[in-house]
Image (cartoon, rainbow, N blue to C red):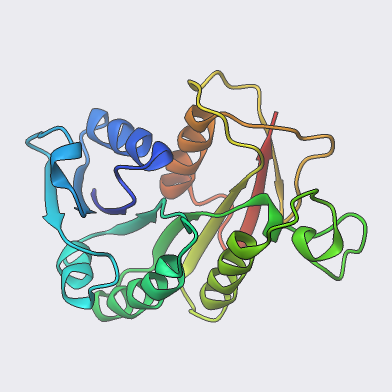
Length: 205
């Protein structure tokens, strides 16, 4: 399988890349700093900014699926990039995309008509990241693609140990954290298994 990977130098993206390479898939990754990635015969690295439509097109060309582990990093990079992913995927006839979101865009248990960041389920006062991920959620819902947004709660570094819980569109009750390793393991498996197409998936221990 050919995988187009965005956010490969980030915490989750790096783990997804390792798993994909270990499984023998071919990966094309876009990175601003290619030197951060270890060379491998099955890895092609495109250098550039994810907001650049031309290099996004080069990264997606020939892919079977797309994976995005892009964060917000206090910028609008995410919401500038995702419309280009959608456009290029449609041009290439690619249907499957998995992205990493945030638990803030899952449905609220306090007020089911709202998202968690809107209803106050989370204690975070700054909502910029959630607002950006919300826009991505809206874009994907309208795209007609086979999308899944994996929505971890507090995300400390750590290996995959299993034993986590997942729930469609909601954060598992009393969920407090989930490791980078387990988030990557679940999201990578979902890219291939397609068990949660068209939904957000809350993940936590």
